[in-house]
Image 1 (tube, rainbow over the protein chains, first blue to last red):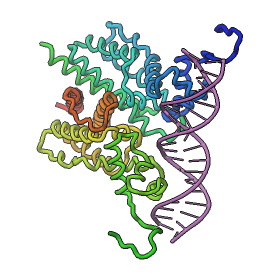
Image 2: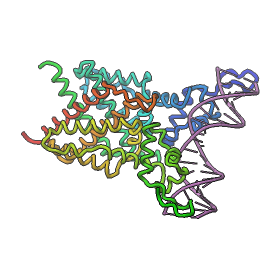
Image 3: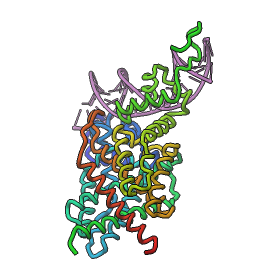
Image 4: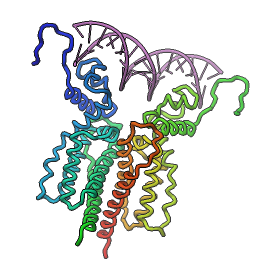
Length: 203
Length: 203
DNA sequence: ACCTGAACACCGTTCAAGT
DNA sequence: ACCTGAACACCGTTCAAGT
């Protein structure tokens, strides 16, 4: 693909950030959060362990990139249509995020262990804020509500994952009770937001 | 202090579970979650690393004990008095738990990384259920609500801790904004529970 | 600039042995 | 039963060196 002049070795440019992050994501899926290892990633892409440090300053940076990659897989643009009821849109977005996090066991621990400030994270946050504005919340309340929803989604998944684990990654059995509890809580929460939005604005 | 007969070494019984857990708690306070190490605990109590395995089967068991120890420090009995408004009691309990978790940075990651099923954890859960029953929730709804509150408390603290870190453990600066957001969310949530309790029981 | 080999300072855990 | 010394199979990260 790229030009290979005559000498073989030297700066071979076999890697890039995306390749590393893909390997990390695969490792996360296969071996869980503890399986995401600098040495493991390096081995998977066929390189010496310290070669990773050419692309990332340290492991924490790799994990931040991994989380970003994960959030990029959530298509939040689907929920911007203001003609749909805002409750439905938030519920759908919450379910999507939850599902994406549950697909990669241990991803939540990364989410909760690393400050999430990348572009994809902000994009999801903006979508959420827009929906909440449609719901009639002023900016301050919308910010609080977005944080509250974040807490509920991440907290729910984290606790669910903590209670399972011990088993192999291919735990695909979908616990129906868990999703019911998640939705029950989400709806109580949205009830509370509705009530607050009504008291905030006049009759 | 203890009797030293003639031969010095042998089964010296210098340790017990409590001593180990106290050392682990100190380590958690001083060095954060990653600082809680089998070797570190052993060094702190003056013993070879593998001596710990006489009292705990593995590190995970030590962490479970540590979390239990932590939950034991929350005096939830104070909030059983049914003459006080249930909202106030839940709020006080939530603030207590939150404060206890924030006192030991990294404790939340242990809470979220390990299934919590010990007696102290169950006791806190029972107190919460009792208050929710006083609020007029039937057992099913009370169980869901207790879980929801759990999620909010643990999730809030986890996100807050994740956004700080990087600094030394003695970060005692109390962020006022964080507690306001925590209470705002908690109150939205309680609003939602109130609304649901009213629709559940007749007029 | 990009990669490797070797090393450093750590981990959790196990095993054989001593008392 | 309780503890130690030594070892195993790992970590993340750094450093000097090669191209």
